Image (cartoon, rainbow, N blue to C red; front, side, top):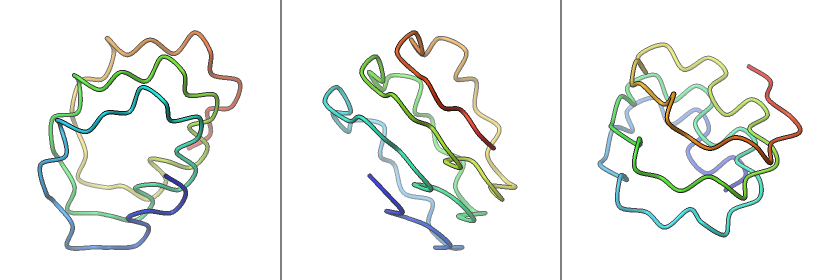
Length: 78
């Protein structure tokens, strides 16, 4: 998922049904996608090892992701 929507400032599509169970890194996935504010609480991110810069410069996102299993994450960096 590296840089998938990076700096796509108008991106705000529903991606809540995506199967994230085999994803290992979300590096810069949503960086700068300022319009993005979709519910992704149902994502299975239990295998993700790096959330590095996933939410960097993401100004509009305010969803509660506190239920995510981040026990395998080694890198979380805004």
